[in-house]
Length: 125
Image 1 (cartoon, rainbow, N blue to C red):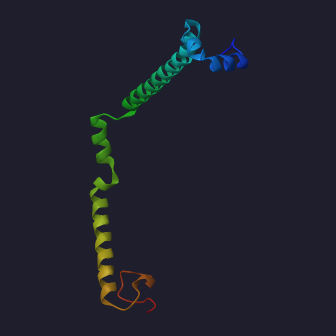
Image 2: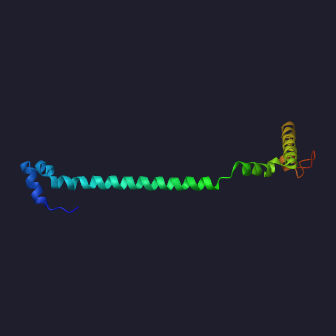
Image 3: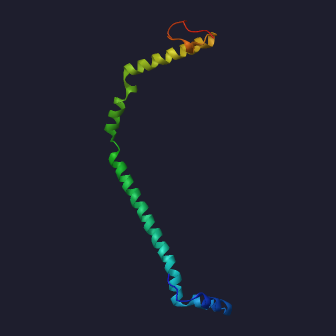
């Protein structure tokens, strides 16, 4: 903002009480209102840009999201849906629980066993 009034003039006006009268002048009021309008314009522009970015992001998300048929096909292809994989997971869980039960019942450290399927063969604690 370009000022046509120097500092010394403002000091004199302030001492005489004329600063309030100067600020009420139409020329100065337009200078004071200009930064407010500029700030409002920038805020509106920033809001518009953010809104446009959100709109583009939503549109892209809608484009890449698979449809219902594709979702069902993907669920069928998952490894957890394979019967052989389900049986293998159940067997692994059974072995783990059996090992934990045996470890709770004995003083031997079963983590040292080379073959967890056997009853012994590891170092003792």
